[in-house]
Image (cartoon, rainbow, N blue to C red; front, top):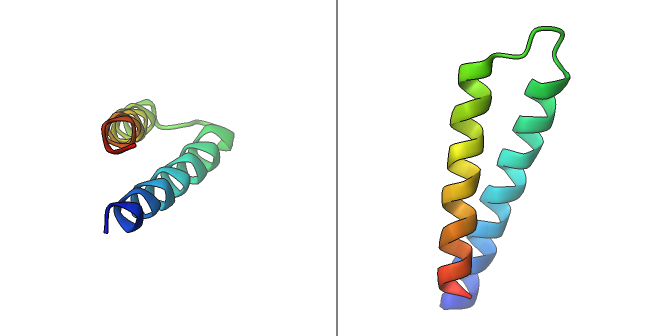
Amino acid sequence: MPNSHVESLNARHARLEAKLAVESRRPLPDAVALTKLKREKLRLKEELVRSA
């Protein structure tokens, strides 16, 4: 069970990374959206560290 939770967190983290990359490449990136995505990504990373 814990392993599937970690895999789920990793998948969510990867999706956020992809969204961040797309937003960053836009001609005028949305700073608010980037900040929200970065915060969520950091939250997931912290949860991964606690779960590992």
